Image 1 (tube, rainbow, N blue to C red):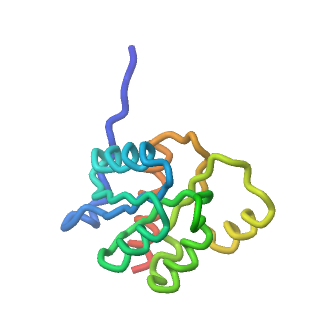
Image 2: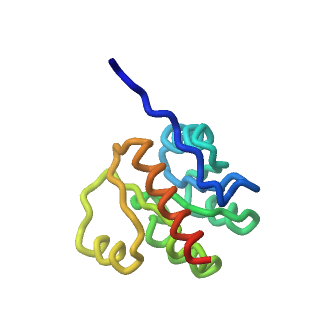
Image 3: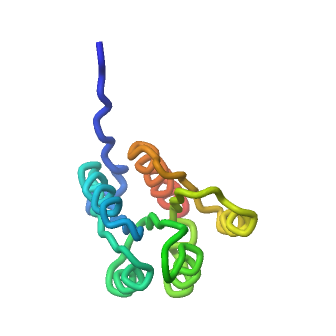
Length: 143
């Protein structure tokens, strides 16, 4: 007998609003797929395909979690993190990074310093959802 796991709804602490997730990646197909799937999981997802575009969204909208690629043309994930957190310090521990490449020493130091989770592409949507749910739970516990 084969069983399928159903999407897990976001934590009930967010019953008044669906948690908002910003997905940033230069791969348009990936951002669209992740955004759509996060919507199915009960989140409100917005997508951006460049760091500047994501910073503009952050200037006008509030997000509970940001999922960002590390390697992008123009502004990479590390620069995006620095700029986003400078204007929105509450996001410092609410980011998840994605990479399709091996992580070098400098990137490892950055990730250790930020304590942000890292997922290696390709990753399962379930692992993305579990990390987001964990960040939201930590956020709720810190309030």
